Image (cartoon, rainbow, N blue to C red; front, top):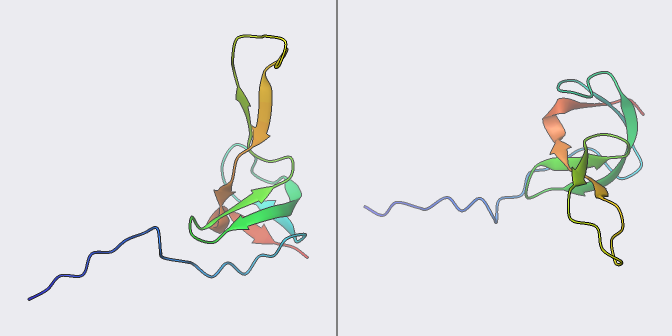
Length: 84
């Protein structure tokens, strides 16, 4: 009997949120905040929302990067609710 391996890299989840949709965060640190969807990541089942889940990357300052960098990290698509 052959057992099929489940490779999660190829598995795509249908995300019903599109770029530009207004969403509200349902759980976590940013619960209740609203923002627009910037990108969707179907293979990871995540969405990137503006102003939500901002992560700072600390590194030693130099001429190329005088300050710490901040970027938006994707959130689980199940933890946001579509508004419009």
